[in-house]
Image (spheres, helix red, strand yellow):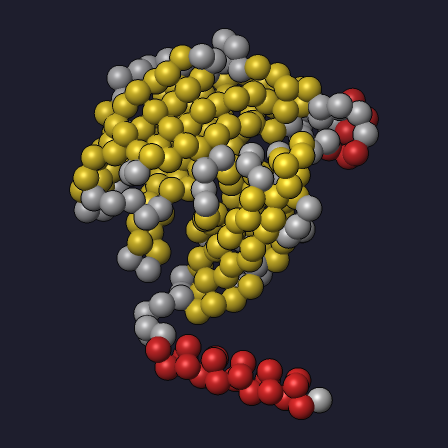
Length: 247
């Protein structure tokens, strides 16, 4: 009993100390709910929800480290896939409220439903359309990249697989394939494959932006000047970006 009381007392002191030293402009901390936080397999969709934000609101989702992570956000919820084993911190920001949770990913491949074997459909001959929009919260600005394929793929619950490779302030997106669930786990139908990446904060100045699709490397760049990002992208097929100027 004394030990429990001592722990509570120390925790109370730490909370008080943190509160006194916290900048009044910093986000208020809260929790993020996750469908699972451990024993996560590579390519396994994990659902996160930030209940402090209203349904349908715009929430900024980030993962640290962010390499080889895919975020599919929808309002105050997000489905996240991890391509590398390790420990990650998933964070959400809505206005002045911030939440986070830690997850652990194993070095084994996810098999949807536990039965059958998924198929990995190559992106041969496909095109990727990238739409860029701005995200800004608490004075921290960034970009949201949304991807959609030109082709349609079997099973409505397929997954577009790609890696995000960061080098300093440059980003390379390597599109791998579309994971098609086994027959017994397939949601009947076909649709375009889609995904997205949220990148922030982004520093002022020049940034490299490269995309690999179907063995072809598409190279461009963009400049962040204040609240405006201007892309240089010399392609009108294969991989396209719209708009080229994001305010």
